Image 1 (tube, rainbow, N blue to C red):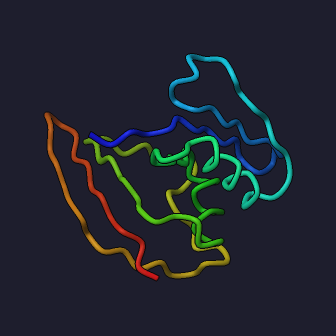
Image 2: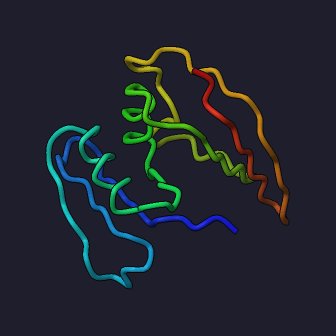
Image 3: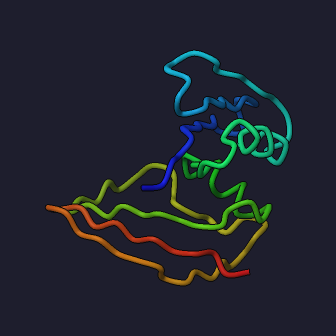
Amino acid sequence: MRRIAGVGVRPADTGEAGVRPADAGGAGVTFLSGDIGAAVATAKEAAGEKDLVILGANVAGQCLARGLIDEILVFVLPVLLGRGTPLYTGGAAGRVNLEPRSSTHSGSVTALRFQVVR
């Protein structure tokens, strides 16, 4: 089983990123402001050998544009929301090629895992 560090990053317009190791039990939250690359570097340091999870389409798009994403996990559910933040808008990175790694299905949820091709 993969160990994952719980990391949440607020959208860029707030200027803050929240970083918390998974085993912190709610304590040890650090807020950062400034460059997304520096925030991700701090989060990776806090995660240690664990996988780092970037949450939120806005922040994930910024990280894709900076080449900071290795893998994308997409959960597909049988509902269309019709609004909200797009998964990816292109931004500075433009086209991003993905290589399928795995897909799993449980109930009505399908999980698709892709590696970012550089």
